[in-house]
Image 1 (cartoon, protein in one colour):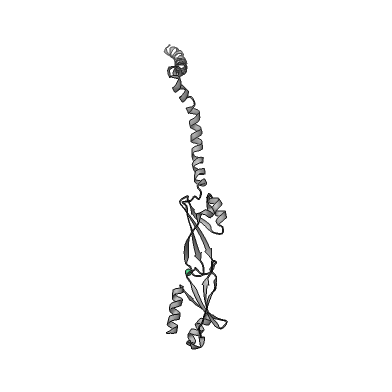
Image 2: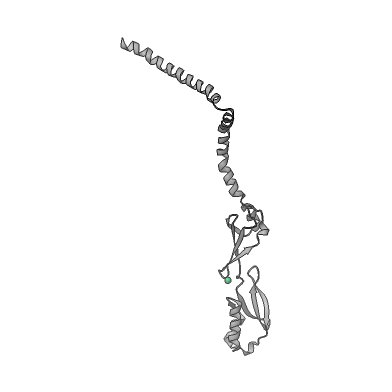
Length: 200
Ligand SMILES: [Zn+2]
């Protein structure tokens, strides 16, 4: 007997819940906006549609912003040039005008064969390997009956800078042999020092 009574109650409960819930929701929908002042209602209405689009586009826009970061007049551009022959790396600041307004990709193309090691609007570091010697070096060699001073050019190749009025006959044999082979120095100062020592 009790079971028979329970079943209808169980069946009715969800229906009542639906009616109450639905009714409340219906009333809420009807009364909600109408109780708000018109202005607030107008402001809140577009918000739900606007918010998702902002959230969706926020991340891509930030990424695009980073990619779009470009060289400006305050960007410091440093080229680290490594010379293979002597192993020295020479830092050189490049004029940013040559790369003004460029993004990382554009700069990478323009600066080739130098590679972009790091890139920001504040500082760009480029690196490049070069055959030959860094600009510090100098070489003395005996050639064509004269002592020549060679210095590295832009590409690090040793090229003639000056011919010296020196008589090999007055020099010790081992020095002459050294000169015929060529003597590499770390700087022009070292060359001068060496020549002074020879003369004394
Ligand atoms: Zn060097």
